Image (tube, rainbow, N blue to C red):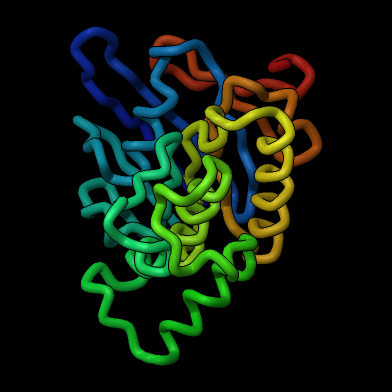
Length: 217
């Protein structure tokens, strides 16, 4: 569950205000022009930006000023943010323990999530040896390993070709249904999400408005 109560962020070029409620296990797409405040909205929920006033409630707990790592949230960015000197297994394991000191049970968790996203045979490759789609799978696996109930996605597949985007969206949908996640995904191509999300919200000039699916395409 995500609830933003009279949340205000005084961005100098465009002050933003969000009143928003997303139910538990609801899947919501965020659309709108570049610079409208879509990424800022996700950053406020995740804790990478802090609001000037108002409240943020996540899974019935107040998280207005909580540090990002303490929030029940994982976030997948457009850039996969992999460490080039770490292999696939290590990059995924960062979602569990930043010091990478994993015991046997934790290593099995890494292997299980890698298998879920189709990376079981690539665990010891470096990011430079992966395709764009494989890199995004690593980043997605790292998010899933954190096992948080809320998943935020900021145009995660925009750099991929249409066929690979569809493949990744199918995988993502399968995983969010299995894990019963609350999902918020920013996209410039909402037509790809018709039938996958429950609701589409449009952001304009730092304000949120609800849309029917057909109106957003």
